[in-house]
Structure formats: C-alpha cells, structure tokens
Image (cartoon, rainbow, N blue to C red; front, side, top):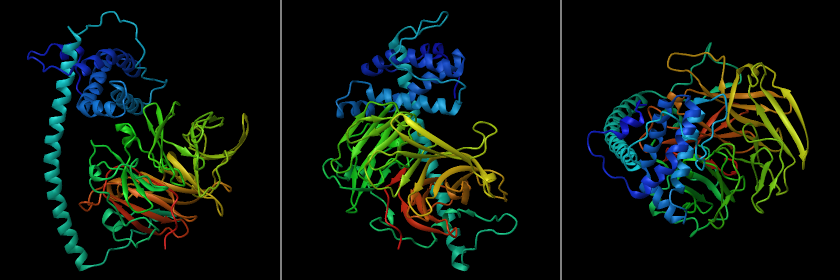
Length: 519
C-alpha cells in the first residue's frame, strides 16, 4: 500500500480532473468519519490517512455503477457507496484482528484534531481521489489483459502436455505410504477431479453455466417455487455479481431486487434448506429474497458477519438474541450467535427451533480442546452442555472455519471446515484446508478430507447431499481447464470416495438448497 499523506494528494503539481459533484459531496461527508475509524484501527495518523484514501479510491472506481444502483432502488444518493465502504473497511478490520472493537460510523462527526493539515478545498481532495480511482481502473485493465494473455498461453501448453501424458497411461492413484492416515482423505488435483466418477443429482445440471447474466430473465418477472442453487456470476477477482438463481425447471434467473454488492457477500448457507428464500448480508443490513415472487425485504437488524445460519426453512439466526422469523419479521431470543452455530439440513417443520449445536475451536480460549456444545432454549430460558472432542482425530482439528452443516436423522453427523494440524507434508503437497465430519453425540471425529489449495483449488463446504455424503466446491487452481472455473464434488464419509457432481462456469460463491440424493 502506498504511503501517501493528505498533503501529497492535495498538492499535485498538475491540475486534477474535476470529480462529479455527487462524489465530491459524498467525500466531504464520509472522509472525516472514515479517517477517525482508520486511526482507531492503525493507531497512526499517516497510516490512517493512507488507508482512508485507498478505500475511497476503490469506491471511486465503482462510482458510476453505485450511482445507478441508488437510482434503481430509489435510495438516497451515496447509499450504495456507503455500503461498499462499510464492507471494504470491515475487511481491513478482519485482516488486522485488532484487540478492541473498531466500527465505522459514517453518521458520526469526529472531533477536530490539532495539527492536522487539511486540503485547500474539498474539491481538490475529491479530484485527487477520483483521479486515483480512474488510474487504478486503467491499470487493472492493462494488467488483466497482460495476465490473461500469459494465462491463456500457459493453459494451452499445460493442456497439450496433459493430453499427451493421459493418452499414454491412466491416471495414477493418490500417493500412499507413510503420509497416508486412517480416516484422512485427500482432494485430488484439478485434472483428476474432472476424471472422478460422476454423481447424478436430480434436477441439477452437469454444468452450472448460466451464460450472460444480462440475457437472463429477472427473478421478479419469472419467479420459481424453489431455488436449487444461487450463484455469484463473478468471472474475475475484481468482478462481482449479479446473483443468479437456478429454478426447479432448470432455468436461470437474475436476482434483480438486491443492492449491487450483495453478490460479493454470498454465504455458503445463504439459501434456505427448502430453497424458498435467500438471505444475504450487505454491510450492516440483512436482505431476504422470496424465490416464489422475487421480492426482497430489508430487515433492520445488524448481523454479526456475512455468514447466515438457517435453523429451519423460515427461521434465520442473525446474532445472539436475534433469531428472525422471516415470515413475520419478528425477532425471537436465542442464546448463541452465528460464528460457531451449525445449520441443520434435512430438517422439517416451520416451528421456531428450540435447539442449536455449536462446534468450538481448539485454542479458544487458548488451552481449550475442540468441543461440541449443544443448547436447548425456550424464550429466555436456556441450558447448555459442552463435551470435548476426543479420539484419534481430535488432534488433527485446528481452528474451525466458516459455516457448518448437520444432517438430521440417522447418525446426525456434522461437517465443518477447519485448519488441519499435525499432518505429514510431501513435496508439492501441503494441506492447509480440511472438511471435518464429527459425530456430535459421541464427540468424535468420523473422517477428515484435506486439500492443498494451490493444487486442488480452495475448498468451500456447501452442505449434505444425503445422510452420508458431503457437498463441497473446489475453486480455481493451477492446471484448471479453460471455461471450468470450479468443480462441485461429493465426498462419501463411509469410505472416503469422491465423485464429480457438476462443473461451475464462475469464480463466484455458490449456495445450494437441500438436494435429492445421487443415483
């Protein structure tokens, strides 16, 4: 990140192009509270000024699209920009992991600071930020073009080499020997993921390739009783959205009633188990979209994170004491938040839930082992029981990551991603991601699936296909086939086998409803 002070930005020797009047007005209102929050995060005036202007420059890059979003949704000028700025700042806070809570309050007027050198005019400040945003846009386009050309050439070479080798001999098995562990399976490299046995899932196409989002009908114009999948149609690291919905009829729709930045914050558990609703967090807002009508409703609650946890088809856990009945909009008491809560799948009924399960990480607090915690609650009354995870696999569980999913009935297993610890490494293979499956009743690890994201693509846990198979998605990695951005896999926890469900023609996040079992 460049170390620039306000003085540098406001004293350019060459005239700065004038920024739009609405951007200048927005900068005048948002720069002071942003600098104040950045100072709380960094503890240094110079770093705070630099961070604030970097974030405002990123907003400037998207100003035209943000302005159009405000007009489409009849929102006040700058509303979409405020949401984007909140999201960008939240990421900085998450990366910094401060010891105290830091929050960006855009409506707060911070006290004046002595000795601070102000720009000559707000217009000059906004013009410098506007120029930075435009320059960044041009630079990204040039870099993207150069990288794309190199990547296409490299991909072609890899494809030719792979084709020659595959024509001579079959794919070899996964490495075995001293590195092999009982109950620990490995995700294969990308090329071998595409060669896995096929698992056919009812109504789910083999290729999740919706095509050009601009050519798709809007969900509000062509609703569906049940959504099977929701996909962020992003095709590059800097692009986002829009959100696309796959209906039971096999047709894709474009979600047209959400803020523009909603797609970038799609959680793996965003789609309700029955596919009737989609929940998305944007900055400090919660939106719920009805599949059957395409209507989006904004709920005035402050979520803890972009992760959402459906505890049933109509009850959404947002935070401690915030269990939302999405039908009525009523908030019900709940003793837990979303950080470690497990989303039940294959759960029937619409009554308010009275139980919730959590998986707690080892080392939180510092000497604690991994634990299973169960809650029973009715109104304000609640009780909890905590059991440490034991058995051979307990020592392999590092910090838990992201949302977890439980499958109802039968064994009632729970799956959640974690950082694996104590695993052997090999040349070119260093597993740093894993999906752990636990039996919560016995508090024991049933099986572990590990991956090296550089080889396999990053893992995302999506839920359960049935009572014994886990759904997951592998992201882009080296050796990927052009046009096949991600792979949707299913992992059988009985024998550790993997199968290919579908390919995904997008780099964006994916969320699935409860699906029928494979045949």
